[in-house]
Image 1 (cartoon, helix red, strand yellow):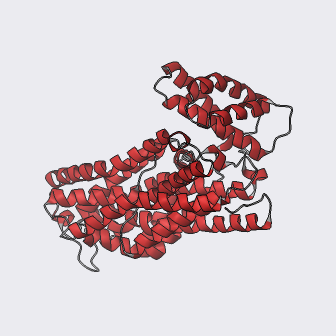
Image 2 (tube, one colour):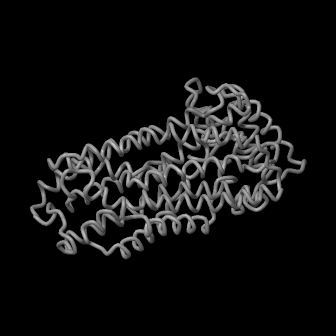
Image 3 (cartoon, one colour):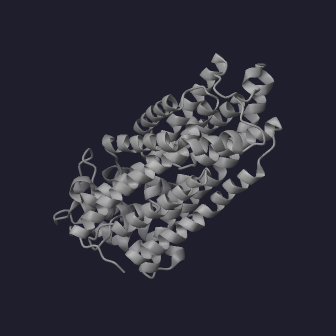
Length: 449
């Protein structure tokens, strides 16, 4: 296995490469997820491609800036605490290389074949793989070393959201067809011919809403990944939130309140590490680097998360656990505005270059007939609502799968039929993304760590 010593030239070079990789990954995310936001407005000639992409990029930026960081750190917390901040002081290079290399390779592979694939699935699969790889590295029991409660919570959101997109978009399309008698809404676009002004305004509105909601959810994923990278590069500057100064005495008090809960209810093999972290934070007189404090905080958060998920804990104990976690998180979970802007820029540039394949798939490949404005509007309105609500609850969802399932739902509702060949390709990508990325990331992490 390879070793990356702290502050060594090799470690710094690899961390710099990881920073480039996370930007490239978000750039590739623009090929897939952001392209879904502009697909209808471009396909129907409502906006010129360049105008649509620039407008979508601006709305993504606004969504990233206003959307918070709940989703970003929901994903980060899929990783074991000792991977986030290795206790031996080594930088998290193996984790970052395994994560970005795996997710980026699968994203590019599916994009090349024009298959709408979920960057969320790529990222989550790689994160799960790293957690599993870490359990093998430390010879831990797999059932007790991976936070399955957090993983199932994320996977449920990914599984349910496309089904909701399919049925709700189909229902909304039927409502539109019953309530609005405008032939232009239900006629496929003609090449180089702009739609009715009312239809055009509606589609621009839906494009805007999907782009904003995408930024508030998917844009957050890369924020968490960028933060992991810059913390590895410059832990002294970024390990702790500069806008939330660390009060060692206050942290010690919170840690001591967490001790009885973790001692009683924490079932995972991280329990000794969490208790050791409590002891470490309680030694307020001793020296501690920002990275050490960050590592201790994440160990305690891991223990508190399990208390909240344990059915044996009472309602008041779960409430106390959640309160303590809420008090601890601001010290380590944050994102400077330049990180949010960087995320949005990478998304927008990727969309400008790689949107064509996905636009054609959504417009002509899912149904047996070409997409109509009403179908595009229904799928995008439902998609925007589902993505936005998930973004503010902290659950990651797949823009690609919500929009594509919504388009499929409107095709069924309209009696247009489904292109089973394309639907099968999308379904196979959906089915194989997790096992492939989990396996590749686990193997890569095991070899590198």
